[in-house]
Image (cartoon, rainbow, N blue to C red; front, side):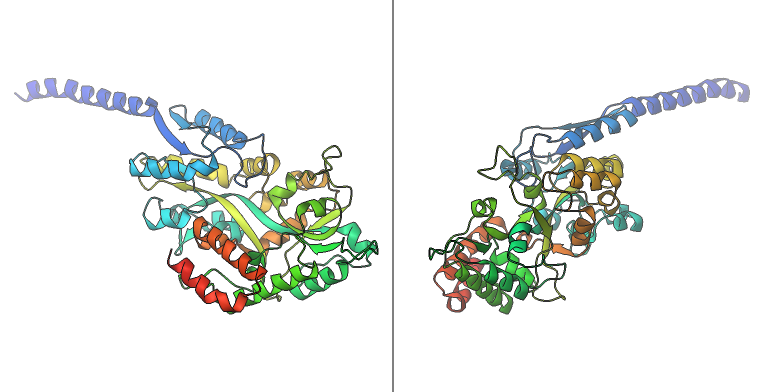
Length: 427
């Protein structure tokens, strides 16, 4: 009886082992689909002809390493439509495994549980490789819900020729609002003697930039902080600055023509700048440079940074594969070097910005070798803050911008701020 049991048991064990091996082989060869959510074009609303090149190249390498994995995404979704598209996918329960996080929706997606908490995956070494301001962009209430992919700081671009002609030194890092105003005051003048001002201190310097320069925010302890002392100071400063121009609306065209000393500009704008009427020459006919934004005092950092983010779906069943693809895009030096080379923003990695290739990219632009160096860009990023526009939704921000600019024009700053705060709160 025992012999008969062994006679049947041995083949049974062999069959089970073979079935297990077959199942293992099938599992290793079955195709795994990773869905990716992205939008077409630049994250920074500037022209680009290189959309998704870095992404496609990284995907090819990833799929070569994992022959049974296919990464798919829908192409042609505009940035404007992307937020609605993603929201619809989430409502259907069909959200991508990995997706670019819409600029205005990060907090909402983290709060509602659509994004997976990445904290368990992140080592200290990985966190330290990013610029702190870029890494912070992916945090919500102390937890990591996204990794940074590309950053875009706002810098102060300076017409060097104009300042030198007026005998004024180029401001250095750590310059103040008082210095900014003083230089604008000296620069703004009638150069032709016809009684009309034709040379100006600045253009496009906004109340948001002034608010950050005074250390202010739109939110304080999760509540709107429109009627704040910092906001009062910021709007008063903007009013003084505009009064220098006798309320003439100085434009970027005036800067293009060499009539303006200062022009705040994002890195993406800088890298794609083609002003009118210099299209034939491609760029302006004067030399310029870029420096950090001015602050009220040394205790504040006034250079704001926007950062595009990749987040992982809380419902993905392929978290290890998705995490590897995320780190290939966001933390691998090779991919991030291509971001610097082929996009309009900059890498989120300190080592990439400091690389020989990045230095050459900046040195060979058409603005001159010293217009913006890798060393200066690195210093800006190490002393930068998150863009405050992310603190409230885009609709409220547009309404606030309209109301505050009206208050500046009508010289009603102190009297209307409480009512503006109430109006925005009621929305």
